[in-house]
Length: 323
Image (cartoon, rainbow, N blue to C red):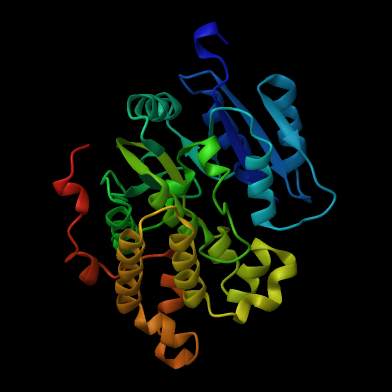
């Protein structure tokens, strides 16, 4: 590692039984053109070859470190302990089954250096399959550069085909540590991004540098029941699975707004945007009490997406804002 590329970014890789794809993920990180990184692999009591693969990688590269655990304490705990242990200027999570283009770190860090008011930078996304073949691009369009928090929040809540890919971008560590991070409930990544939108600007790199793998073993597909997915986030939280996920998202966003150091007028504007979001998702909110009203709402609640026919009528507030 050259002096010009001292360690600036920590990559936290939480994993449980991820042996099938872990080596590919590690290889894509080691191939980065920017070399000033450290990788911390947090194993959550895997029962396959995950820990062996991680330790072998650490023996080959001094920038790679391994955290273990005697028991599986859930995905949320595993994600968050990586943030808590970070001591570098920047941080990003990396799912064990995703891969990066070689320029990923270099481009995202350059964007953050160029725009000190941005707290998160991420690139466009390609969806790949279990064999790493490209399925196609995914348009996140999550470029939140408006100066007013309520406008950033509006686009966060109502962005079309939103899959929370930005959560795997590069954060300023000091800001990320002030957030709620990943909660022990489904769609907590959506809530985290909502808080990020309130706290500062988010910039999208106009290049497809992030490859997100879609396969049969993803957390949502492997845990089709809400109770199972709740248990994946936190094994001790299973009994809370029936606690109305759409209302959790609504209440968490409102709670975050009123904790911000905003003027009363801006807090009210933010609250209005959340109530507008509730209008779009009234079926999900009602379906938490009357499941028959909630046809495909569970999927939307978990993914944080808005039907395209509705989202297409929403103009981005960024179009009127300078970048």
